[in-house]
Length: 394
Image 1 (spheres, rainbow, N blue to C red):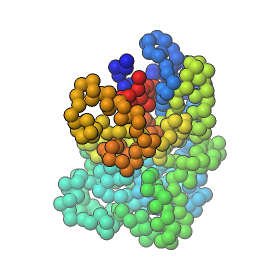
Image 2: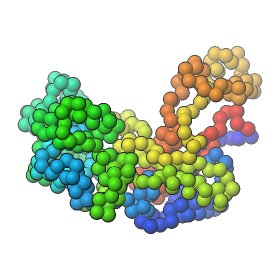
Image 3: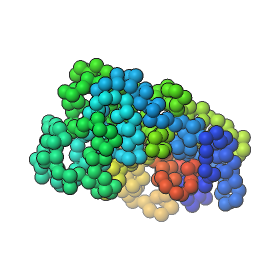
Image 4: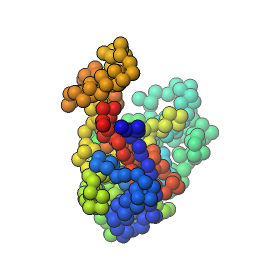
């Protein structure tokens, strides 16, 4: 008889460096943790590895000079604009430094009252009282400041005024404010879209409105420049600040990494252990309103069992309806039997109403991100057990 369901534990790892045999080190440390702490490894377990470990051991880095060279080649090196960058010292500051280095004049168009992932440029109450229409109103910095002076644009958590901070990277920067991506075309026809999840739409709208050169962050460093790191699919999307002059890119060749780690775990344990690479979780902070997902995806690669969506019955629906007259062992057995005979796809079925319609890779990746944390826990690898079990599992 089972007494627990899903469990997730962070696995302490060495501090990984470029060139380390990351597959061997991860599988060895998981087996060692299992032996030393007395928990078994099973078929259907999941090992999640944070994207930073994969990218760091690959040496997937790029300097400002390397980024600027690619941007200059694509956007022309004269005047250019960027639209919808997120407000982040970790995620965007070094990219902005490189972009400003690549041209003579740079227009930076910020969305308002918040960026794409929920970082507020202006607090909601102040914004609402201003009577501004974010769907139609666009501003120069002078016009924006006339409505929202400097004491209203300090970020509540970081204490940073991102308007002033972003301007500080180069004297050639001019700030604009609009939620219409085509507003930038009044100032320049060379545009780099810096949004993440809406990037395809932004690029299409800019091209249709007359942009002469239009790219997204995923187009920059999609191949190496002067020995730089690169990512064929995501370019600069998912990058993080490494130093004041360098970023760590989103890892490349992650499908190969996942396959090699799966094989190594199989060899060492004899078990079929699923593997995924995960980045930011797909969740939103209820207080700050910040959506965590600043990476292009939660999981860039995972084994096949982590594809698809959950297919779960809503147990409380049956307890309150079909089985409302049952209790105790009779109720439990009726529930188990109902789960055993559930259809292969419950989409649209009232029996599954209220279950979250999300991909397995997003759910498990978000769980891993919460468990591993983003600071000093030292657990960049997470072992999830019992995820594919349910109330009827023996």
